[in-house]
Image (cartoon, rainbow, N blue to C red; front, side):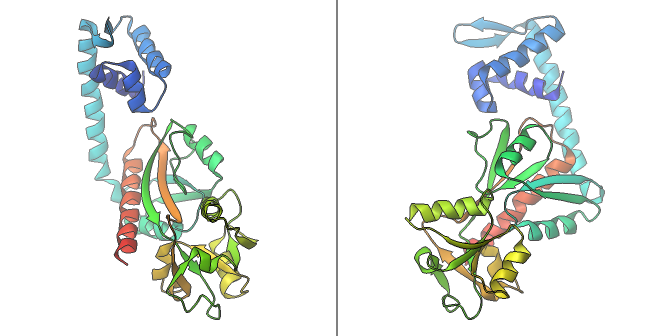
Length: 302
């Protein structure tokens, strides 16, 4: 018997309908039915009565529901209490990403908040991110664009940022003198960009395609340092950056805000919705949400 099973059972009892409970949980109706049947087999008794289009708890179900809710409430309280201890705790969070534009600043925020802990970051393609979150091989992922329920009903995603983006240009470039650059302005120029399969590349390709344009890609790399070198030192082209780079004290002078009909980067924080939340994962989720909320406020204030 797992905590997840208790949560499924309690929600089904509260809603009174297996199909609606499954929709709320983001899983299939047979999956919820199987969980309930497994509980009943383990307990050796039925828990529900069938009444027309809804189900209700029988006497055994009422007793089990009250006990299950008490257990879940105690677990949630324990997690809340442990969260208050996390600043002094040592833990490791595994984070997958398909766009590196925000990682440096996020890692700095993490180290400042939890100096004794480790944020283990790994680049992965979208399909690998989904597979690893589904199988609990990673704690979280930051994906661009966000992972949707159509891609995996096992994954919960919170949209944390809508980034209008910026471009990096060398000082002798024709676009350097412009404060704001449109898609049509930058379309003719060579572009340094992440390879296909990365989050930013998929977004850029989609936006260009919507406008009937084709990006003139001359160099591909996921390494942000190599992108900056290709633009500022080798002068091979311009590169797409997050809007937060316009505030960077080192490279902000070379970045120009962009204007298009949609955000260049919509970022989602994803995790397995059925994995038991620990104090460390809860603390990290709150950190990420707060981090990106601050970025969004900064971007929106410009």
